[in-house]
Length: 363
Image (cartoon, rainbow, N blue to C red; front, side, top):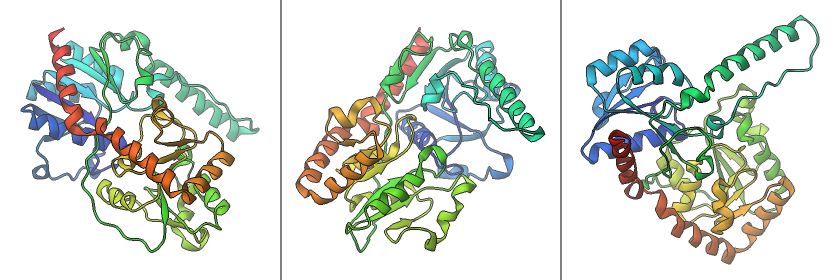
């Protein structure tokens, strides 16, 4: 098969879906397919060295004319779109006009939710202007969330089975995320737990700080990893503004995160419901249980005893204290996590992508 993979790229923007697309692209090449990774990025940020990848690299502006040009050049059989709904409708229509099959990938809960208008209760001209912008953007989002257009999709893949059968697409399949097990060794002079996410409001990093303050008496540090993507959290770069038991290590590679998790006690997760965090998988590979506050994807953590789904902040404090103190419980939950993690290996999942793409092409 000739396949287009469309997303941003992990070597420009390190995020969960970008990591997934890199893994998918290079493993499809291993299976004998021709893969062109169409990278959506500003031209000035586009500095990828093509010789570093087993798949082909191309730049994609999100304009349908650009997609048509690339289709004419490379003659793909199928497009795998993992860029959420950004630019989806106009490029889906363009691809269908060119006779190219189109598979949409759900990467976040917002991919299957209709946008909600949230006006701000402020007064004055500035408020009116801001609410007008919010209304205008909401109208655009509603236009992009067009159910009739979703019916034009040839297939849909979701990283979370809870998101199946919401969008009106005939061929749908759940294929779990995959992660790789490469590790960069890491050492720390105290026991510690780990939090991993890009730092912005919906990831709730402030709750980690509050959690650490509530656990100051424990012989344990809280290590935080991720790029600061919201200027409201830039203060985290200043060591004296963090509690003594919190250490922010900045943006790190998945291999480095694997090393940090290797010697940790457990992973903590405070993010709002989203897709399926790669950090869960990385922790489970290393036999580390998970304490999650708001999000238990497909109830895996609860049903398979991989840790705790706290649901409230006070309960999370109790769960952290329990797991820090109880070595036997940590090891038991960690064993469950390790056994469960096999479903998230590339070896387990890449043949599923290949089979689904062939199914779409042969429909």
